[in-house]
Length: 306
Image 1 (spheres, rainbow, N blue to C red):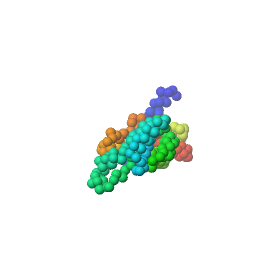
Image 2 (image 1 turned 180 degrees about the horizontal axis):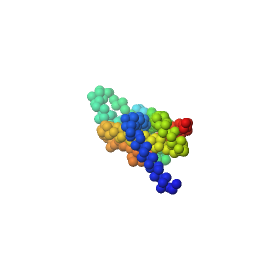
Image 3 (image 1 turned 90 degrees about the horizontal axis):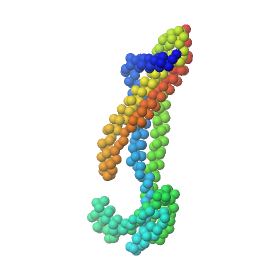
């Protein structure tokens, strides 16, 4: 058999398998819909995670240290500490926020102006915002710098502003693992759905398979149309999954953009790229082929002409 004949036979079987499943449109669409929903859930969660990473891409570079001075320290002490810290090799910049400036910022941002006027004195301390040097912008570097600053006189509290970012990134890492686990379980579910569908198809065509084997057809030849049927099921389910995810992103894009605008951000919800979409279709077709191969190999082998 030459290559041209081989491709012609496979093309004929490929198109013929599509014709067979189209003959039962309701059952075929229901099977593809189940596959599509099963694939859409982890796919949408992954899109959500990727957008969250894009929105927080610069957060892991936030390592500013807030230094709150003792209220009893003289007003000039903040400037003296700022000069002392600027001389360190692991410090890139130091910004001084006086108690009066902090109170004014809080008054403008909070709207509690009348309540603040009732206070006898300014409750806020002088504050230094220390930006570590690039080489020290790590968890270990900021921890060392924090300990050194905390040991200085008149320093009451030292807080690393990136602590909450680290917690957020840790939560996102857990979510990523959950998504991978969910994807694996739902992928197994898709595999079982396709395998069971192909098994039922084999049982319905048992007589036809017996005749084919009676005239000399091999198991591989008999199995071939069922493999292509599984690929069609996977392709249809993958397309439905992409449609569902694109529709969900379209419904949420406006709301997400509005929320980002409230925070002064230009962030836009990103959908699936061409490469991601092609990967989803490839994975769904691969699951379809594998599920049909498992079912066809197992059940066709048991059918013998009588």
